[in-house]
Length: 226
Image 1 (cartoon, helix red, strand yellow):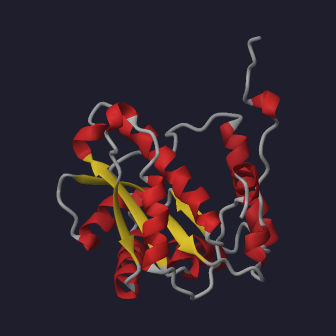
Image 2 (cartoon, one colour):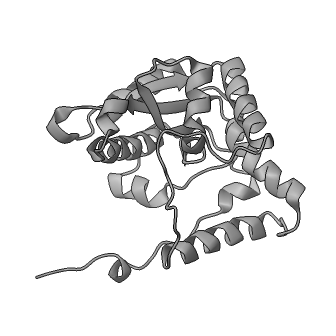
């Protein structure tokens, strides 16, 4: 069993999974643990749809890809990425993308391969289960606290998964098509999708799973005041 620090330091987003289901019992244990995450005023604003039905996952993916193919760039409840990219964040984004595409030998002009890699997000990288995390729209109406709380909830899922030998990939790509996902799942009108987490058994032989983007040095993000 990994220690907490080992789980944090060894975790990375995986983009190829084995077609092996995650039992409902394990899902429940992970989500129960994640439910212990802190939240302002103990709101516990996360509302989760844990989807293992392959037809439903197929329908969600199809709907998103169809929307993309129609020229729609996003159909979302919240804006995930900055509308204006500045450095150092722009540089990190570019380096991360270049590193992944270089590893997978995908050229800048190879539109077919680049599109497939992007569509793989919505085929869930072959995983059998996806957690879709929503919150009540009123929680994020001119307020951001619930988004922060649901971020802590995400990290709890990612770390708890390691306890069971599982890997994950948190997805901002689905944030950009949150309304499409809500429509397919027929969620109540008061809910807004924040993100999703693909969870399953990573394909250790898949080259793409060897990718580990760089992290900045401690001094680049932390100021100590002694």
